[in-house]
Image (cartoon, rainbow, N blue to C red; front, side, top):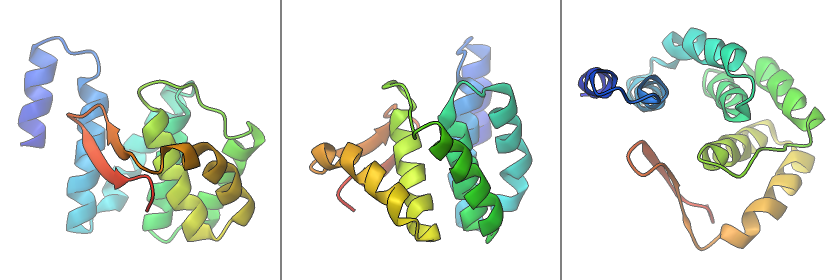
Length: 141
């Protein structure tokens, strides 16, 4: 279904069809234990869309989930150098969710504290990325 959705979105001229595809494919491969297959595509998105910090956060999370913790720390440090800033737009939710998981996995208390301050006001809400792409669950978790 993920490939059919990409085909439909592309045929319909949806400019974000490829981005939505990678996000949805991430969850399919994660559930199949095949996340390493996606690393190249996510790294490519980091390089080609450097203005979207959510991709770097996603790469750091992918590294965490594939036991490449040194690589995850390196990506987290790049984001920390920018003050964990991200414009409040459609990818902010993915950015914050991914970074929170990375900080937790790495046991990075200072990163977690910085993210906590930003997420605390949203604790009663559910984390959704453009409702049609994915739902992470409660911000309070």
